[in-house]
Structure formats: C-alpha cells, structure tokens
Length: 485
Ligand SMILES: Cc1cc2nc3c(=O)[nH]c(=O)nc-3n(C[C@H](O)[C@H](O)[C@H](O)COP(=O)(O)O)c2cc1C
Image (tube, rainbow, N blue to C red; front, side, top):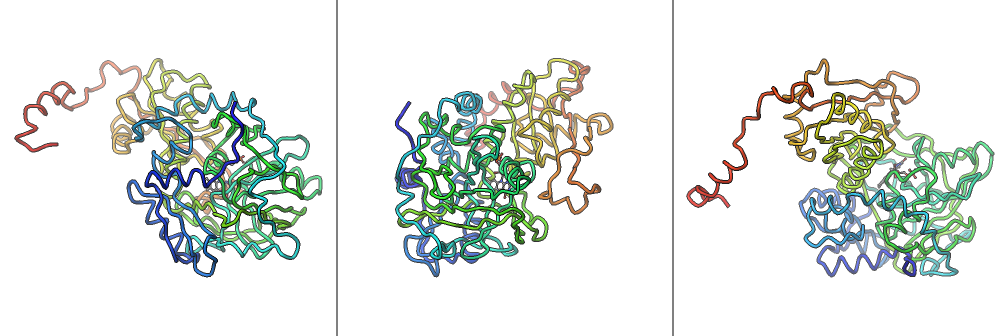
C-alpha cells in the first residue's frame, strides 16, 4: 500500500497539460460565458478540458476548470487505468470487473488523517467568510442563481454511526455565507440529513469545491449504502486518501483540496433553491425550498481552482463519464443478481446515463431476457430516474442506438414484449413530474424485451445482411476500385 493521496487536482492538471489535453481560456465572464463556452466545447469530438483564468471581476489565479471527464483518454487517466491505446472500447474493457474489485477492497483503505495540508493555506472565518470572493459561474440562462458546486463533493457524517458519506449534489450561492444544497430524497446525504433533522440537531457539512476529478466522479455514482467514498477511492488508487479534519465540524477533507466550504444546516433552515439546467437536458421544476448551509469557514489554496461540471441537454460535461461508470456498475449488478450471459450494457448519454439503459445477452432459457430487463430497471444503480430498460440479443451493440431501435422495431410485439412497472421510484427531478398522477413522486418504467422470442430462436427470419466472410472478400476485391479506405 502506498503512502497516501491528497487528491491533488494540480498534479492531474499538469499531467493532462503535458498531454495536450488542457486549453486555457482568459477573460471569460462567470455570468453565462463559462457555461456556454463549456457547453459548446463538450459537444465537439475529442475536446480538451478548459481552464478559465482572469475571469471577469476576479483576480488572476482564481480559476474554474470544466470538461475534465469527457473523453476516454482523460477518463482513463482519472481512473488510473493503464490503457495503452486509449479508445472508448479499450476503456470499457479495462473497467470490466473493476467496480466489484474496488468495492471489495474499500475496507482496506480507511483515509489517513494528517495534521496539515495545502487546503489550510488560506482560511476565511467569522465575518471574513465570503463565498462571493470566488468565481462561481451562472451556468445556464434560466438557472436560479450562481452554482459554486457542480463538480463538487459534499462530505457528511451519519447521526448514529461513524459512516462518512461523500456525495455530489449541486450547490447554489445565496449570499456571502449561505449556500443551498439539493440532495434528492433517497440519496445517502439526504438520508443522513433527515436523521439530524428528526433529532433537531444541526447537520455538519463540508463542501469540497475542487479536487482531483476522481473525487467527484466517485461521489457522483451509486457507491453502496454505508460505504465511505474515500475508502472506495482508496481502492481505485491503491493507496489511502489523505485527509485533514475541518476545524469546526471535524469532517475529513482531502489535504490537497482546492476550496472547501464548511458549515452547518440548522434544523428547519431552508431557502428557495433552483431551478437549474439538469443532466436530462431540462430546467427541472421551479425554485423550491432546500436546506441552506450557513458557511462558518472557507479553506482554500493560493489560486484556487473550482472544479465545474455543468449538466445540460446531453451530451454534457459529465454525461460520457457517467455513461461509462454507470454501464460498468449495471453490468456488475446484473451479474451479482445472477443474470447469466450478459455481453454488454450501456446507459445512454441521451438519457442522462439513467433514463435509457440497454443490455445485450446470449439467451439461455425462456424468461432470461425478461429477468435481465427487470433487474436492469430495478437494481440499486438503475432504479433512480430510470425509464426504459431494453434487452437485446448478442448480435446487437447496445451502444449503437440505430441497432438497438432496429431490434425494438423488428423483434418486439408491443403487446407481449413491453412490460410496464407502475409506481416505481420517481423523482421531483423528472421532467415528466409535471404530469405525475400521484401525490408522491412515483413513476413508471417500461421494460422492453427486444430479443428474438426464445421459443423461435431457430425459426426466426435470418438477418438480411451479407455475411462477414462475404463482406471481407468483396471489400478486399473492390476496395481500390471504389476508393474505400
Ligand atoms: C455534477 C453532478 C451533479 C449532481 N447533482 C446532484 C444534485 O444536485 N442532487 C442529487 O441528489 N444528486 C446529484 N447528483 C447525483 C448524485 O451525485 C449521485 O446520485 C450520487 O450517487 C449521490 O451520492 P450518494 O449515493 O452518496 O447520495 C449529481 C451528480 C453529478 C456528477
């Protein structure tokens, strides 16, 4: 086991700079320009990460970094995956089996507590506290405010155990010393928060606003209930995370964090938060009351970097990384649930890596496809804001929407192959919640069996496409004449 890792964003940034993966942008405005530049950038193939400096109205060195996780190369480097020729396929296959390994090894990597670290280089406390001293962007036109927390990690402690949770939740700036926190019901941070509220106790919070992107990558996916994300990250790194204890709350924060807001949510303290352009591509809902953190202290390094990760209509800043991560987790969830013969899984970016998931299987028995679809739709990783879970045969590439929809169009009889699950886990963040018909946020699911009917595998019409051998033969013969490359 190595020495420990303080989740230093600057080390990663330097490595990426050397690899030509970072573009500096000088003089952009926090008010909509950072968001719009990032949005345009992320839709370009093989885009670079953007490091904004000299942001309008802020001193040189107060920076914002976006688009960190959007390509296979950068994502592989964040996950410390030794992939030689980095391609999407190489990344996905290098990830196979990894989440299970990380989860089982997490217990071996409790964070190491240090006495000091660069995060304590500068401290604001009491009347000095000023969240507005940092260039939090106003990301989208119809947002309800400036969001300092997007690529962030919110550190909290359970009320009746020593479980530390680290989750990514959006954080809106209210004023110099108040920020709003949107933790959806059922999320681990929200579960912990509710326990404090029931006991009428203030809820301690530390919001890490910039660190190695591995932190928000893992804080933003479904690590099992009761497990600390720092330990999971330790397993990814093969060394423990180094932390210092925040001075007021004692919450552990990475020694090399860029900027941390520490404070408390008092029982019943809420303010209007949102709306915010969300991962499915809509401004969800109107402003609504959300817990408000009274910021007691701000810790930051000289020239701090805010790690921004603004969602929007996909593909967006983190849709690729979430598609890769959630697909790997779904594959393992299916295998752990005893579904055999799963070839591949893909959580499509257009569904915000949640609302449209596809698994391909090699059918082995009657009911196999249905079993796979139901688990895909309802397992822990797939349940929240799922909508369509589709199962296809092994000749269909789940990442290729044309192939998937060809299978749906040609291998289903809607009457028998589409199952509807009623009153499943819904969310106030669902754009369709305007039309929900229940008082509580339930929503339905469609599970589509787009596999050839199992009892007709032998007599199902053959695919009308030249065989691979014939294609290769003809290609080799005609390639030059037809100037195919
Ligand atoms: C950039 C980003 C922003 C997110 N914002 C929120 C949010 O505002 N509220 C929320 O409940 N989940 C949000 N999520 C999703 C959660 O991070 C995710 O569901 C995670 O599993 C929550 O952690 P937990 O399981 O420890 O609660 C966001 C994810 C990312 C990557």
